[in-house]
Amino acid sequence: MPQAAPFGFVGPSYTAISPVIDDELAMNCYVEVSGSENAATPKALLQTPGRKIFAQLPEGAVPGGFTVNGRTFFAASFLWELDASGAMINRGSLGAPPSLITKITANETQLVVSNNGNLFVLTLSTNVFVAVNMAQFNGPVLTIDFCDGYILATLQGSHTFQQSNLEDATTWNGLNIATLSYFPDNIVSMISDHRQIQFASAKKSVWYYNGGAGFPVFIPIQGAFAEVGSGATFAMVQADEVVFWLSQDERGALVAMFANGYNGQRVSTHAIELAWQRFAVYDDAVGWTYQENGHTFWVIDFPTANQSWVYDITAQLWHQRGFWVEANGTYIMDRAICHTYNFGKHLVGDWASGNIYDLSSKYLTDFGNTIRGWRRTPTTGKANKWIYYEQIEFVLGTGLAPGVPLLDGDGNPRPPQLMLRWSNDSGQTWSKTYFLSVGMQGQYGKRVIKRMLGRARKRVWEVTWSDPYPWYFTNAFFEATVQKN
Image 1 (cartoon, rainbow, N blue to C red):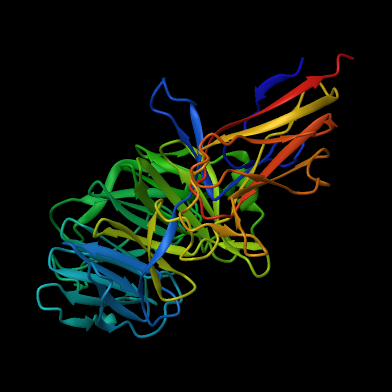
Image 2 (image 1 turned 180 degrees about the vertical axis):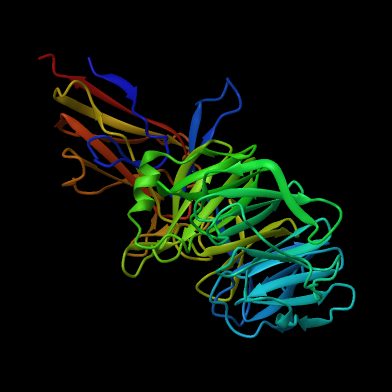
């Protein structure tokens, strides 16, 4: 008799060095682990959030966002302030479009922007905007952050960091300069976390703290040293009370880590590391984080590789995100490159336009464009015997179609559809694509089943979806008979 069995439909991205080992993919979908033992399933597969345009800046890209005291700013060629309606105010020129990621931070009275190696300061009480006199520095700035009333800046191609005067980011005393002697390489990344500063070269990391006296104020923490550095300046982020980064050291690069005390602890997988290490360029990676529905996500965009990877810190699983270009049927890097939270919204800047988006799971499109989800499963098989597949069923919310019906090519109403195909040779060749209805609006009892599936010794299933629909899967099962001999 055929037996119904789950087969790992709900899962993360894990494409191993050979598809014979594992060829899983989760694009624009992620795993949620249930917090209740009474849930219908211990794990579900949810679609990643959509986007709605919140504001449209006259810019070619928006690579920096920040909120302070309820005021939200985005930076590109100019510094823009946005209100809750999306209305914009130009607060001043940043000189030129950014060639690097724009970094924004603040002290108690000032907003500070780093753009193309130069600093700019907006006084929050008066909205006076000035360019900082860069003659106070020994070179262009790489990145900035805030700690204990001071702005800290690392300098490009150097071992050096400088600190501003207390609560004054326009003044940088020449005595407040320090050269790190704990490693021979230049500073690659810097981040402020728990009133400590982590500096990373390409091989090692060291932590500093506010010593309270002398010049400079920030001094090394004794014993706070790690034999691992950073491979991407702007991928280093703070989330869930710890720092995450893409590592590099004497032995290689691109292991995703978080700081466990003063040690790096690996969170990437062999499959993730394999994918990244194939990139011709990886040091341009940009990281940003956000939290929605109890999930904290670390998004890593690789601009040259044109890909986005996401670590769900809550579930401790990886997935991919991509913007679907319908015209040529390909994914490109997810369109968000920075994030800030205000007005009850996740606001993200676009790397390909001046758009600011409201990012939310309540939206079913990417600002009107298709969100194309894609799940490729583990290989199903048993001792290399023939398996005769009777049927496969996908369990998800059905009958939830939008009030305005979808139309087929002849203009007639149609239900949202799931697209199914499979491979019996590790992805070398594929079946034709089958379209499975998930029901018109109100057809809540609709079952999503495909029968007459043939036989295989090893089979990989692939499901895609692109209709604007709340795609939430609890599981999938197939019924099959295994050949006895």
